[in-house]
Image (cartoon, rainbow, N blue to C red; front, top):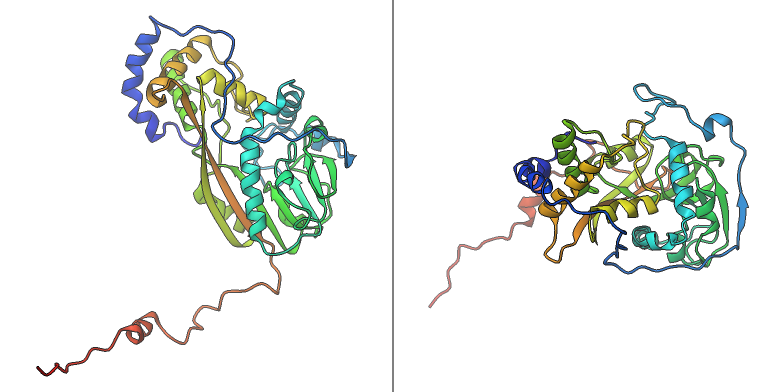
Amino acid sequence: MNNIFSSRAVCGACLSQSVLRWVGIRAPQFGPPLRARARMHTGHGKLTGSGGFYCPKRPQRCLTPQRHVSGRHGGTMNVFDRSMKRRQKTWASRLPEHHEYDYLRDEVGGRVADRVYDVARTFPLALDVGCGKSHIAEHVSKDIVERLFLMDVSHGSLMRKKECEMPTQCVMADEEFLPFRENTFDLVVSSLSQIHGVLKPDGVFIGAMVGGETLYELRCSLQLAELEREGGFSPHISPYTAAADMGNLLGQAGFNMLTVDVDEVQVHYPGILDVLYDLQGMGESNCAWNRKCLLHRDTILAAAAIYREMYGNEDGSVPATFEILHMIGWKPHESQVKPAQRGSATASFGELSKISQPQTSNKTDKP
């Protein structure tokens, strides 16, 4: 959790008390989950077997990373259980209806591809880290990217990758341990982990990740319900990065000429259970080390009522907001434009304002 209570949860605390009392009388019943439909265009690619597949031999510590919660390991804090995330994504990729959960990744993949087209150059070799089913590659033409490496931790996702124009090579590896040499790629998309090292000088990183306001409706509803039913709450949603911190993180990673912007994607579902089912189908369940594995039935029922009362739409659906942080960073190179040294200016803003002021005349027109 980024904080104990968000402002939305505090504003809804009083309302939740009356809602919870109502739940004790009329609790919604469990039944077959309704299929949630995203209110956005969803494009489904075909299964393809083209392209090679490569699984590098990694040390055992990379495949099953140990837990380091309070300390630092390798200069970074280990927040997520990587082996659990791999199991989640593998399970999701084996679902018969796996393509029904791709709508969010397809939408974000198209927006990342738009930013690739904004860079006026051709990339001979590119890498998509955490590619899933190649949600970005299907939107990029071979005129922009000549060759693409697709890397993901899930073998099932790579085997179900979508068709694209350029030749691709699949690599199964953990995003935290990239099996590539330094200065290899002209373009890296998707993930931030260790990307600076594998980029060539003057290479560009274009990525997207979920921000701190993602699923605030679900987070607040679970907090209030669990606090009321169990006398306390535990994190059920993975922690996210705040938009204000992205510039500092990119700068610390060694990137310059940074660009960070924020998009908001809102998806409407029949109810809270459909939100949870779709997150599970995406392979994006909570995998933090401090997660609580059990969520009581009474808590789910209370959270469903709070969710619908606080955030529900007139048609009975409930919204789920995904804050998408888009970032662009360049690996330093001597050919890049550099800012002038401090104190090298030859004119001040005050002098420029005087020059730009229009001259007024004291002469008056004769009648």
